[in-house]
Image (spheres, rainbow, N blue to C red):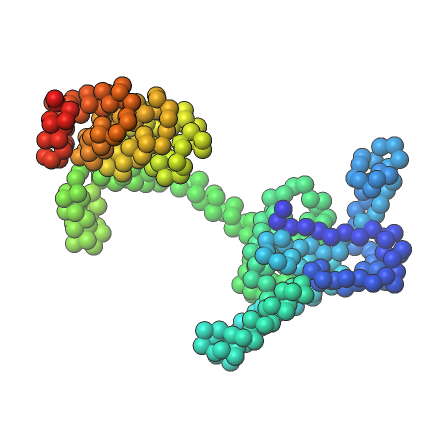
Length: 392
């Protein structure tokens, strides 16, 4: 919950007349015996409760009606003290608390030119003040109040479960609290949002609008997939020298764009997932669904030519941190399919692991020899080691 309303029944107001009221954390005046509540003519709601004082339907046996009067509305998005947003009896109460924060900050910064980092006396005084008000539950200088008001405005505009009369009453009181003369009211914000949405839809329907922009962005996204580092440096230099007038984009149709970018985004997802798995737990199957891990390893294996060294190291770590035989086989296949020196180095290291299962050692040796025959990228030292140890 982000907000809460405190209610009082008309019967309790009369019954508790003269009773002591603890306003700590509530920061409102004593409601017991308040003459304004005794002759209350504002918003009120009638609700039904059973014998155990639990809310119930009106037709429930033994249900009795209780007239409830709203006292205050609070924002709960705060570290210690609820922020008073609406006081239904004293409209100036929330405004004074909002002004307290502005006065403390503006007076210290703009009038006295004080800073917590430049004046030790101000720093100590401010620290003691914040400590005392926090301990006593005083709603003064709350930094979360503005966020709570924003959330409340959004709630009033979207939540249809609130009583219309109560929503209108809260909205009217919230608008009074604002200290910013340039801030729009709720109706103006709604009109502005509808106008912006209509402009967005009109832009999306134009032939040179959203569809054309997506086409340009996708063709620009395909550049790293079609060109190496040196070519991209040249493209970037041309963009800078032309003051942004030239930006290289690949020439591809819509279907080709979706296919290429879809494959690349899927590969990026599986790469991130495998790296996260490899860093998270010493035993993979304890934390992760092993089927998800297998699925990602299988996808990276099939797209091994586009995988990178970080993914190869992740697959090697997963091999070390799982006891599942099928997953370990997929890790070996993944390292074989990734055409990089790092992948073959990790595969050779696994082959040399003492105590490795014989079937897995045989499989890793087979993959290393196949990589040599296929002339995959292997460091010269690793190639000699493969011939010396595996090729015997």
